[in-house]
Image (cartoon, one colour):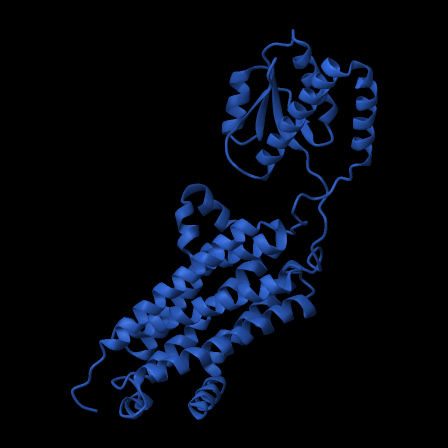
Length: 380
């Protein structure tokens, strides 16, 4: 068993054309990215400066005390957290919201309300602003009713709390627009494990390669050979991705996030789906090796393009018009996982990305094993 593992390992790493596409080409591509974009702003990701959220304020009823308090509260937030736009009517405000010129509309009335067009970070912040006012308003009303003598102390304490609050980036770090290309690059590199998988599948097919003919008459069970091949390919490509990430972070000085454990997990899942994709391509049809490699190039470059490898904003455009593509595109899912890990710190979304990758890997492996089981030869 160990000698089979060793021979497959040596055979794979000595296959320079395949290792070039799986390891060397992504490194060269990353170097060209770095030279093209320059290193300004790419060295690391740090806390971002605060960008005020553009909103509109619609005054429905300012006769009540609570409504006037909310209006004053929003005025104090203007220029700090909020950027209140001068929009005269509700109709114009709704149009601006629909065109995404603003993130939300606050309604000033006895019971303040908020209207947003979608779910996102800005919308969550606006919701928190409204909830904060409502909670503080309810608290002051309760104090005024039960202990009116303590109301000045409560207001002073609230003022001290506000002055001692630090403004930080909410779960996010400053993202230079060029960094997204490196996220897409690592995702593409993960899918490049498909070249290893296609080569492995070809080596097991007697009608395509001499090595496949010899392996088909060996007494070793076919499933054993397949499992050894898969284990070797996973390990090799996992280290390929680690080398690429080390090159990006240590040589090019571009941060991919500070959570090493999560980074290793994403790299492992990416390596797995890349190899599984290649094995599935190699087992699907009885095509020549050259044609299979052409299909492999298509199934690595095209998902990379959709994930933003050639045009950085492509993934966002797809998310806006046809988000299902980003859910089934492994390169986009991998890129999204890097965003969640290194920029947003969104563990729920990060976990969802890993689950999608795991399901894709299982499906591709199932297709590959079904293809291998169907292989029968009249003579060798």
